[in-house]
Image 1 (tube, rainbow, N blue to C red):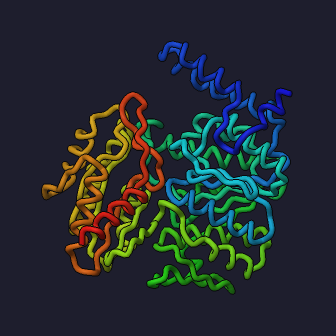
Image 2: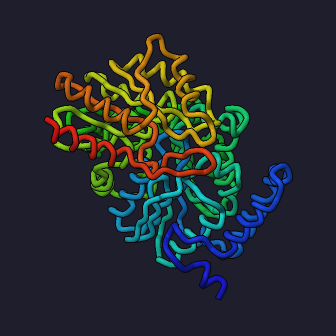
Image 3: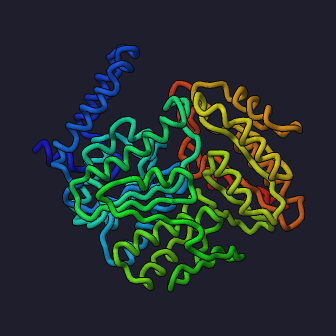
Length: 440
C-alpha cells in the first residue's frame, strides 16, 4: 500500500507523505545545525529514495544532459528524435515533466527537485513502459546528491561558464560538481555507456577523461550551417536539416542530439525528422507575434556568455533590450558584466527587476549600472519596462527587435520572504502588444 500510494498522482505536482514529513522536520531544526548536517541529510535521502522506488533506473535507458547553457533545448531535441524513432520517452527538464503522452509544465522554478521526486518520476516512467528517460541535471542537484543511485546510460555535456559561484564557493567547485556526473557514468552498472562532450569548450576534455565509456566529442567543425530568415540550414554527413531554431548555440544543441542519435543507430532520415519537428523551445529565442511591425524575442539568457551569443544572433537588427539580472544573493559578479554587454550590443537598454528574493531589487540594478558608461533607463516594474521597450520599437525603423532576457518561462518573480508573484514574460509581451496595437 505504501508503494502504491507513493506512485499515485500526477507526474510532477504531488509530494509523498514522506516528503511532507521531511520538510516539516527541516523547519524544526535550527539553521546552524541544519547547515552543518545538510550533506548527511541529503545523502541519507539519496540512499532512501531509490530503495522506496525499487531502483527504477536499472529498468530504463537514462540519458542525462548537463552544462551551463543549452541543457533544456538539447534534452527537448533528444526527446523529439527518440519519439520519431518510435521510442516511448520520459522527459524531466526546466520546462516540463512528461511521461509518454502525459506532460505537465514545470512550475517549481528549479530544474531538478528532490531525490524522491526524481526516483518517483523514474518509477512512473517504468510503469508507463517508457524505454528512455531524459533528465536535465544541474550542479545544484549534484551537490545535493540528486544524481546518486541513478544508473546512467548516456551523458551529454554542452558547455560550462561561471555560474552559482556563491553557492559552490568557486568556479573550480562548480566544475567539480558537474564532473561528478562523469564519475557516475563510469560507475554505472549499465553496459555500453557513452559520453558526448562539446570539445569547443575547454573543459570538454575533462568530461572525456573517462574509462570503460564510449567517448564521442562534438565541435562546430563537424557541421556546416547557415543562418537564414527561416532559422538554421545545416549539413552533417548525409543529413540535411532545416530547423526554425536560431543561433550558433542551437547549432551545438542540435549537433549534440544528432551525435547521440547516431550512436543509438537511429537512421539519418529519422534524425532529420526528429530535429525538424522541434519548432520552438518556449523561453529560448521565443518569437512573440501579435501583428506588430517589429520583432520581439524572449530568452532565458542568464550568463554573460549566453547573453552575448543571444545578442549576436540578431547582429543585423537594431536592438532594444530589457535586462534584469541574477536572483538576489547570488552571482553578484556578473551584474555589471551583463549590463556592459547589453550597452555594447543594444541601441537602447531598459534595466528592470527580475528575481530579487530577499535582496533590495534597486541595489541589484545599481550594481548593474556600474558596468555601463551611459546612464540607462531604469524601470523597476518589469511590465512597465517591457511596455517602454515595445513603445520605443513601435517608433523605430522596421529592422528593430526587442530582446527580453533573464526569465524565459519562469512562472514567478521571486520576492522577499518566499513571496511568489505569478509571471510570464511571453504572456505580458502579448498583452502589451495588443494594448499597443489598439492604441494605434
